[in-house]
Length: 142
Image (cartoon, helix red, strand yellow):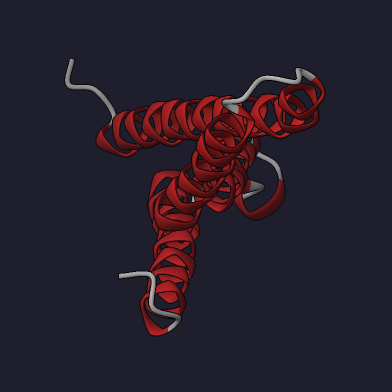
C-alpha cells in the first residue's frame, strides 16, 4: 500500500521547521548568554586594578560587537520565531485533518484540501523570510 504523499510531505516539512526552529533558538540563546557574560565582565575587569584593563575591556567590547553582528547577519531570533510559527501552523492542519474538523469537516477530498493548506502555510513563511532578507539587505546587512 502506497503512503499518503500529502501526509508524508507534511511530516517531512513539520520535522524540518521544528528542527530549524530549535537550532535557531539554541544559537540565539547561546549568543545572547555569551554577550551578557562579556558585558558583565567589563566592570569586573575595571575593578581588577590590572595594567591590562584597557586591553581586556577592549577585547570584551569587541566580543560583544562581534556577537551582536553575528545575530544581526544570521537573524537567529526572527528565524526561530518564524520557523516555530510555521511548525505550529502545520501541526494545526495535521490535527484538524486527522479529526476531520475545520476545513476538513464533511468533505470528501480532505487530502487535496490539506495539500493546499499546508502549501499555503509554507508559502506564507517563505514570503516573510524573503521580505526579512530584502529588508536586511537594504539596511546594509549583506
